[in-house]
Image (cartoon, rainbow, N blue to C red; front, top):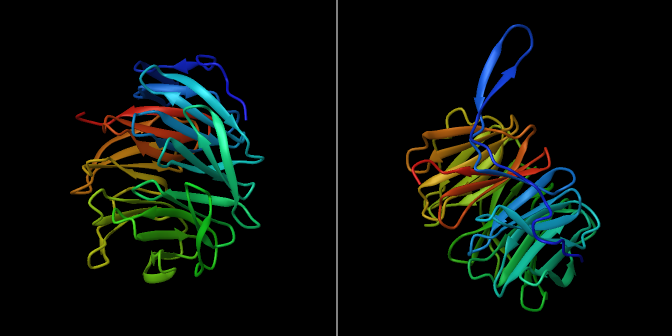
Length: 322
């Protein structure tokens, strides 16, 4: 573990109009809408998550987890310990940050102090998804083995291992009740678990396309899935599919705002889109990353969308109307 001095990383703020030359004689105007671009990772950034106080965490292919002051637009510290890509992370109770990755371990950090608390083995292969229970006491992770494992945050003791998926588990999320866990991935199913009983509580068919990310509305009534066929949504009460987000394309990341009013999505084509959660209408679309955008998170105050880019940057975008 090592911590880098604050302010060492650079920031590029945007808001200017850029002129871009395309092939042939065509010209296109694109506006740099991002609030800020945070640079520090060496290689693609795969995960972002906000702490309750607005601190942002990011993880990437350089094996580091980085913490950012989003108000001051500066890096606070860098946490080193993973021996491969960091693929998912989340904030837990008691000032703990959890992360997983290609070294098939769960790592817990005291993110205020910048120190590692401990690790837990996560199987024999890479871990690709992570979710923290609403009360912050339990963390779950899934990955290449198709198994979803859960641990107690306080002592890193294993709680359950949920089996049923046939392929990679790319996405996990808890419902607000804390008792229900949703998982999805390469096998075209979204599985519902009563994780405390270690039992399946239902299943939704998504189709042949991979599911890259899941998000549940704060009220726990709607789940959204970012898939290779676009963003799909279900009403959880009757487990009925809602109209998809029109024109959402190949989606990679998805995140609800804390008040449930908007949904942010990221895409293979490098765009970031913000939708009205109630009517599924697109509010705006941002383009600023040079490559695929791999993850999204909405700040606790609902004003910012943070995105993780394959171009090695973390970007902050405004939420319309906030």
